[in-house]
Image (cartoon, rainbow, N blue to C red; front, side, top):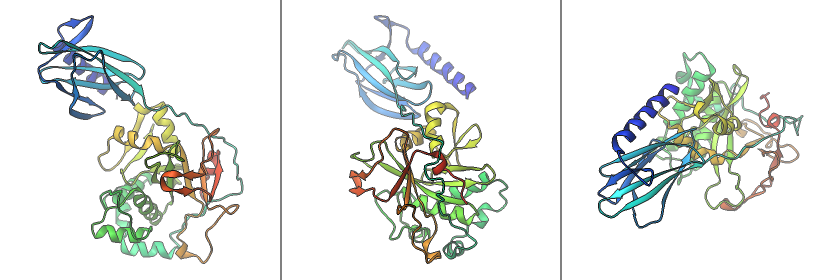
Length: 373
């Protein structure tokens, strides 16, 4: 990472030195014949999105900063300039547009991740245990294994991580994401049958299929629902659905996103959902998105971070076709929500016109990440 950053700094310095041979009012100058310029940051190019206007007192380009220093490029039709932008800092330059004067332009680095959340270690519900499926006794999982076998996918894989990544990649490849279409039933067999017909589905479908196929691979797994800080009154979708799986080898829960085919890792250790939120805030540069496919770390983090605030799971992760019992509940509640210490317990979601009346709330990581039994 350090070598890559040094190489990038060298390129940026070379660009700046070659193109900016004069200054105006003490700041670098880039030349332009056309009023439209390209900007690039986060490995994404936005062509012709910036209009150069010498009549404006100051033009400010706000850059969301995720890394310690984010590369930013400004390109006119004949010239360019670049910076390593830090959150909370600004960078001035001028654009000389033909004979129209100088446009004072400022690059403003903005912090994007400011929600430091904390939880309590002591359990709120010490006798609570989430119910998980067992492939040896589940008739549903046996039917799923017959229709969509996962054995060959994990065969020959020695470690839990190799097996998990293989099942993750298998799930991601079954259909293309479509947030506007839902399966006729929310179970893995129905979803896979309809995907085979060419349908695409939202995030929750990946979460459900990945959970079930991880169970058929011998793991304890669960669907996890992520919700934003402003979940109660956000005007756009306030949630995302993913999967967590328990590794006996590592003795920990691991977060997976089937829609994006990613498993977040820090210092070679796969992270759970809460650890991912913390790593984005504290060690983004060291964070790795492990995958058997192609994943943009920045694009994924920009998408998922906002949802990493409230976390909830069903207390009964079993396939109820396998039992005559009613849904397992604790204190007559069927779901467990992990809420940051000091935050209000969400009780509604206006966007979905939903009331959250079937939830136990906890601030305890021990409650939420208890070892499955």
